[in-house]
Image (cartoon, rainbow, N blue to C red):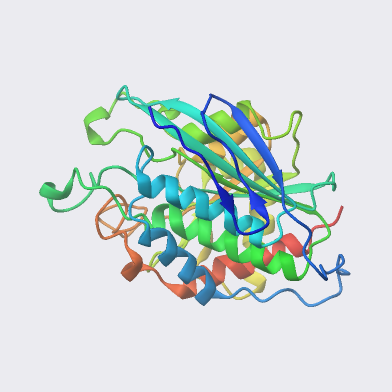
Length: 341
């Protein structure tokens, strides 16, 4: 068992979470930011999403190494992510520590990180992504690498990076609604091909299942959630994932229409993809919050419809496309800043 203490981060933020227990949530209010901007009228220009900034947040995460639960890289990155949200003006940073039991009998020491912006506003939207790395590259074309942990530049870090950049922009210019940025742990410890025919959805998204059953605020509600998963890969295209359409078609329409207005129809395709067991599935089915997934669907890719780097050692910073990050980030900023209470 690993006991972690989240020490003072930045000069103004104290995060203390030693002695982890299941569903233990600690909340830290960040110190007020001097000259914090007031809520901006809807007619104001939208903030400008910076793809270079998001790219650097991916690099920072991968520099820690694979963020596999129960490793130092995972612990160190969690500290950095919590501090980053606080530095971007999250009014509260919630740290949810829990133990997760995996399909193969391991116990993981996990952490969900929630940064709340405008926490007093009852109208809320969730932006979320998993931040952990897959512990094995079991889809790598080289079988000798199948036990190698994944850098997860795209499958994890890209979604986190886009959300961090949006958080940075929200500090400069607040939207009219409340936004919760949630970094979910232990999404990617699910089984590989050895378990074909025995698949259980509950083997995936362990952090989301924990949060959905025990949210950071009792009775928490949100208008909807947007999950970002693998949103920076070269050659990515995003189809309308079927669970998303089933549970939140109006929000799929909202996001895909916003992308079209910005000229990104070639990335956000007006066509159905597959059913994907991802974190949004548990937000829909357990938390009962409409949740949609921006996840790649590349039908012509022989290695995987998720793209050629999925669960391989090639999922690294060299295969990240800033143009894809920009398309996703600008689309989400358009959606968030056009929401009204």
